Image: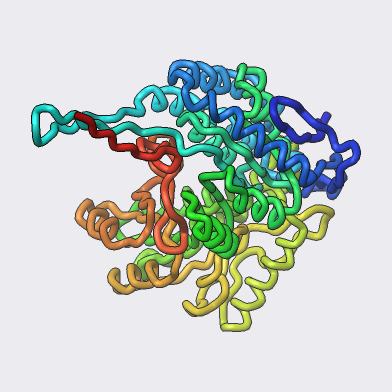
Length: 475
């Protein structure tokens, strides 16, 4: 039974009674699952006041208290993973196994932040005169406003919530209205773990209106956003106008470079399976495939066959490998990418048309012989599209990989350590994966360069955006 999400403000779960609501739709069946309440202006003001009031005491809370709450949340995540995952599949669409895995792996994020928040250290600096005492402390920045996307609704939200709460901040989170169940599940876990009222608040509404109101508020001192580049730039500009700290994890268009000395069959199989994870709706999904000409044909053969065997269907069906696109509007968008490629001389090897069934289904699609200026090679497809092109000159492949303003993730396949090191240095990306997919672990930093973002989440850098540095000197 799908539980309709609510608002969560100052420790209370608030229904949609008397509030504007919107439909929550199952992308596999177009069934309306429930009604999501939008926060009124009064609700937003209450959330701001609650977060400000809670910060006065939470900022001085013991790191041991924060750590204990985060550990409880990690345990609850594991205990409730099946229930939460099923709701994620219902409102987001990904296969149930992927949804459940998203919850269980994110329990590690809560555990990681529980440990790291006990290690927010300052330092002593020797004075130039013996009577001078100098030290540095790191303090929570204040009330945070966070905005998270629909593709990994649990993962993206819990990263920000754990970082803010672990640092001693309070937070107002606007999650994705399209797939809201995971976010309210996070609120319930923190509530049940004993988090004081006002430290975490959940609101919903028209994204542009809610973000504008929260960011302009003098109460908010930090903004964290995960989403598209255009929206990220708008929010960053607004935050900058009010001198507020930002963390931005934005879009990508991840290049893959497969060299002729790679284990081609293994690379092609792994890349094909990773490509259809969450129907390609992943910011670090491999999206531009450059394959050295000597192994181009063999790569394509294995790659296409692996994708051809992918079962597309409702995420609740046990044999489903890939679910629907999360939004109905994304289906014609995929078709436009394909049409543009074919108009430019591209060759379609697999897929290319929406599936003839109810739901937002578009199959894995492989296109070759396409120019570098085509839509699919220059704009993030955010779907199960894979353009594959050959290269002969490695330096040219690197230039093409770096040619876009994106710089989130990249992938290299080679058996040469020298090649791996050289290409890793040359690629303009926040993350370089060599011969496997190793990004997005709790203990590793996650972030991009160029238009793909500012700052990192995870790793030892995880609290940097939520802390201010204070220098104290005294005689």
